[in-house]
Each structure stands twice: as C-alpha cells, then as structure tokens.
Image 1: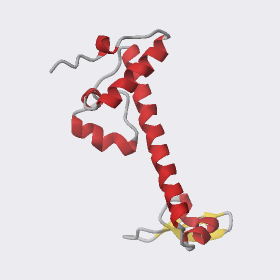
Image 2: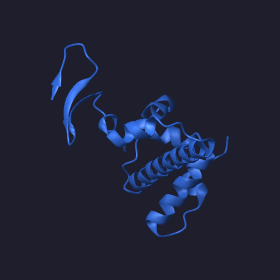
Image 3: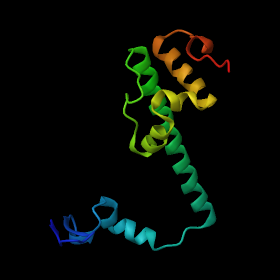
Length: 133
C-alpha cells in the first residue's frame, strides 16, 4: 500500500491488481464500478432508498435494545452504551443516551418493549417513564 503526501487517495493491492482508491473497499470493486455507471430506474432508486431506511430503522432499534439491556444491568448512562457512529452526533446533541431516549415517545415505547422482553415480564410504561409535564 502506498500513499502520496497530502493526497486523499491510496494505492492498494486488490485481488485484481493494484488500484487507486479512497480507502473504502467498495471503491475498488469492479462490480461496483460497473453498477455505479449504469443509471438507476425510478423503481430501483425507490427500492434502494427503502433498503436504506430499513437499515437505519434496524440500527435505531438495535441501539435502543442495547440501552434497555444496559438499564436492566443498572449501567445505562448518558455515555453508555456507546452509540453507533451514525447516531453519535444526534445523541450527543440531546445530552446523551437518556435525554435522547426521553425525547421521542416512539423511542420510549420501544425501550419499554425491549426492557420487558429482556426481563421476561410485562413492565408498565409508567414504571420507567414519567410523562407528567
């Protein structure tokens, strides 16, 4: 692997020989190069956007479940568990995990559902979240 000073690209060995890339393995995939040069139809673009939304939803639900598990272990804090990279800026803008979870009724409801599932019993929403304002 080689790199020029003040350069954003790197020369990397690949299964197909050496190629210039930005460090992302997808950048030096021949299949990706062929696919990216072909314009997407409207249906393909919508399918791609829906897949991205599903992946984002999975990431969000997974992190909320991690928070519920940490809560069950009495370890949930503003910094624990560590948020996945795509969520870090958003969560830190809210002041940490707990404030972020409390900011949205959907997050709170999923948190209670995950916590109940982890404990193996139905926990009342009010026992965890006090919504009186």
